[in-house]
Image 1: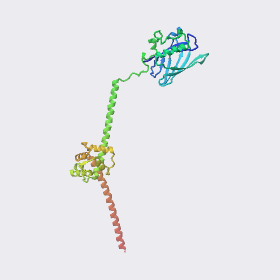
Image 2: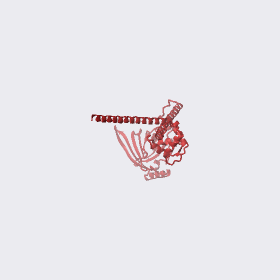
Image 3: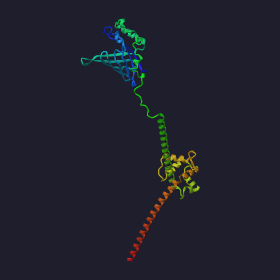
Image 4: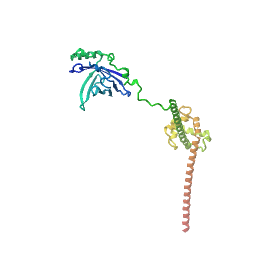
Length: 361
């Protein structure tokens, strides 16, 4: 919950009655910040002084800061005495069975703030309420506290009318009112927001799908071009794919199936064929896609019918490869013819010079 109650008894040695024994009941609430801090309501100090029994008298609210998991810092102001106080509680072990508290109080005296109290107290946890009552009784007896000055053991402050009312609790309890930390009201209806979100997701999926299709198409184009160039390097028929005879295709298939010659192309055989030509390098991912496109029945090998079917898909790439090869051959032929003419011209000039020399002789 958001409310806490602490019951304490203090014995001030050497202080005459009725101030020697004090009871302090602290009522605290959490805060709207939900950061582990507590705000203590004005305290109820039940000494034998009647005017200190009221809720309105005594100390103002004390703020308890959770410094870390082992330390709490307290600060507050006592309206009655005009004292500002601070305290630090530190757990001395992992279970926090012992707490060391350092307290200091300051008061304005003749216009100067001076420390009027400094205490060091060690608290030890009792394992049960019975053990706590027995320990308090021992302290009373060892310090000769008269019976009439002793605080009734575990007296219920609410039974004596010294508990906060619900109205007093709600002056600080965050559960009584709406938190000031509220999200601003939405300017757009949830249905509209959901529509935009769904539309955005659909658009994103569509864009990603389009990009995927484009990349797949580009990959297919790459491996078809490389495969067609390699076929164009080795096949001896100067015609289009559609004009290739079954015999020419069978001869090309047999050339690739060079290792086992079982009428099927293994992945290794196809890789060796692609890698050994001048068509350019093909990376492993493109080759895996090429083999998957040729192996229609997913048997792990490519038979002759699958080979022919894939060749039919490479018609344009094959035509471009053959055209490029023809242009290379034509350029080589022109260069060779030019070189031949130069050689003939040189021979004719040499022969003419020889004849002229004989005539002069």
